[in-house]
Image (cartoon, rainbow, N blue to C red; front, side, top):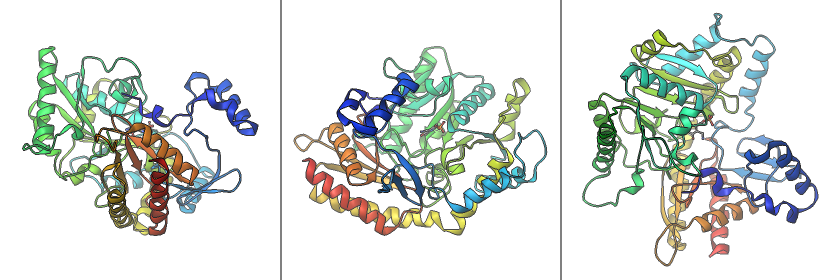
Length: 441
Ligand code: PMP
């Protein structure tokens, strides 16, 4: 398996071939950041400005951003920028003092979630949120076992990395982390996907028991982003959640990707499945570029942890975070972005399905709202086509459209634009993809 970040990574050996300012920049970066420096594309990009779904490079060329889910209400949205600037100029401090902003934000945020999930803890990133969620689950259940899907990514802390099979270049997660196939492993046979997925979870619980452990948490990204995007049929998660609950484990819904309306019909991805998580984690789009994250759970789960350890996050829940978070929620509502995600997402999906009739290398088009996966396959035998995916991603970059890749083999084009994308921009994306596909095969 290829780590997700490596799918579209620039190869530093090619730096000298690029020449000029680009080469100089690449070498400077390599010198400063060393082995951890990763850049996208065969010809890396440098941006200087963003607005809506557009990113502008140093020459003023506009790129259509269909990759970045962080600026979910649009790059540099003026309402969010103004809220951040105003609050930064007035007060910014950690949240061990009273502040009305964070209370207002907590109430607005919790109102989007099931009523049983009534406590929120603020963090700064999705990784911190998942790290805390896993610790909460371990304390509450007394069980260390964690179940995740095979190409999942849940973050960069030690604990979140252990629970992120896609992060391992060698080896894999430790024995207490059991890895189950993503929903794409279902052959489509007689057994429904819900039953198949529940069986995988039951198998992982049995494995843990054989190793003398119990399942503390099933940690699932409810749209399976890095696994290759599996949204349908709605409800297929519910049997698996029942299985983990019967084993006294908790269900953690990682909403870093699908959260804040991306799937088009609801605030949170888990709501499409009609399931009730014990813990919800969130991040990225929450602050539209300002680092914000949160863990939402039932009071007794948080209390069990705080009795023994407690949690403090210096920047989590600051007055600036609250102002930004409120502005993001306002924009989602005022600009009907959830509805736009549904409308433009459905339109885009339908146009991609049409494209698949002309390009046999498109094996599947799937997703919900503005999170769409296009599976590329080898024309000869229908097997995954990661090299083609890579060339299409670079071909789109040359046509000023940004997308990414996902899935076990890196063969799924990941399309995930800001929620404000227009029909005309969706058309631009499809035309560029059509062109890139025609050029590549
Ligand atoms: N969970 C999921 C599903 C993610 O996709 C990511 C980031 N790609 C994270 C958690 C971690 O978020 P962050 O990078 O903000 O720490």
